[in-house]
Image (tube, rainbow, N blue to C red; front, side, top):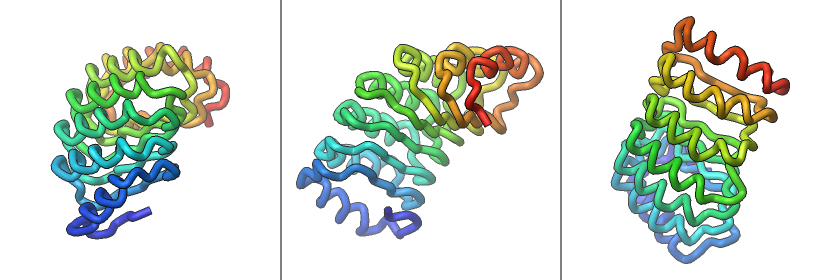
Length: 195
């Protein structure tokens, strides 16, 4: 885990090492390293060699839609990825759609997903539902501060209702209003493990 380390020079060393094919690497956490779009692109090229990855965290790295698209390209190479954490990056609907389209190619499906602060909006939620609804095994979903609004929450309802093993659901700071909460309420009853 390389949390909070200065990215200058570090990212080059990490990507060079990953390029050697660390197939046994299971978890990579490069949170809070100022990776940005250019770093995400470079990292995604190296990550395709890490086929055994089960957990990837790139939280708080200033990754925008371009970097998210690059990360999305790499995701289709991970056959064991269960956890994806990208909170604090402004991936926007475009980046979210690309990531989520490629997540649907991953087997087994994700159990933990965090896109908090990603401002994915309604179209991002639609891509999320399309990607994960066929294989409902989520146990943790964090979409805080994703600009969902009532329409985004309504689009999320089928996914939440289908994931009956969901234990953690975070939708804070989304301006869901009363109409969004009303739409969400029936789906929550399908998830008895929510705390």
